[in-house]
Image 1 (cartoon, rainbow, N blue to C red):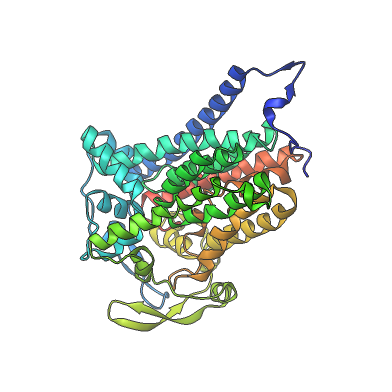
Image 2 (image 1 turned 90 degrees about the vertical axis):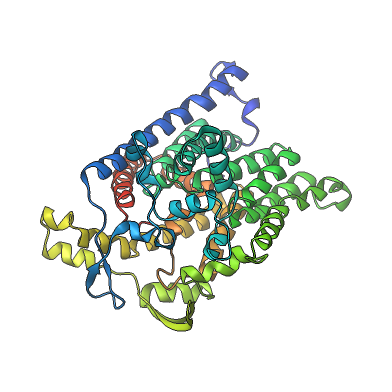
Length: 458
């Protein structure tokens, strides 16, 4: 157990010569998360707006053999190639840079487009786009702007609840640095985007905070909404089961009737599945439509083999199954950078595109995450480990022929224990921690710029 781990609830500890008041605790749990949220907002928003004002959209992509470039316009990567209409006024500069890639899918769904003719929309869980639609109906704002607002508010709520949860088991210093690590992680701009990361972070952290406090009714309600937000919501059942057993033991008589609440979270999948059937998309449409992202079944070893060596896999296409070439991680961008280190090349659309397609970020983040998981098995509360292991393993069972580890740098964002573990490792290395936070913040600024101009990040 770390020296920063608390063996009892923080409310029973002392800070200095006197007991901390409830008001002081409430103030601390709001002020620091708000400060972190504001810093994150400024870093990501300034980067995105500058990119939109002075940058240019991606204009190339690889042809099928990944050896030469062909012309391509970034916004054509929108959902079904349907380019969104420009937003007006302040929304053009603040919101539009954050609606790219999956943001166009959520916007499409928010406008009521779950339908058999747009079958890929079934892969996007409904709570976030329904909230976008609701806020748009109330305010008259475009759905993208509504999503942008929801994401920012949910991220603030997620930081506040993350601070509360971490303080149950760790010191104030660990809680604060964990929030910083989360907010300046290189892909943390997704918390500002029209994506589900912020909402899912808030719901999953609140779920486990409530369970940790033995408030199981609130826990299962929040877990239900998490399940309506992303398929990973149902995986929160693993840490919830650990906490339930730790609190109630193995005596089945002590489990009931509270254990019946476990029926609530899966209803999120049932309701979404039923809703999809009303749109002729199939009860399991959210899973069945993953083929449209070139996903195939594999074991983790095969997935990593494809990452490092490349492979051939049969994937489903619109014209039927076909043999797809899975390209391995590439350092072509680094080789060309060494040969041509001029600023004009570094800022060229070809170089930026090569970086985005290289899979280097996918590999580095995935390896780091699994290392932290292994160390965390010894140093973190057990439910923390059960929180992160399922959502890290499941994507390895369904890699994509585009990128086998596709979206992993984004999937790790709501997995709070990874950031807590990283902070624990750096707690006595202040200079190194500050240096890494600075580098991470710079990468966050640069990757936000990439995302805003339609280069692939995660």
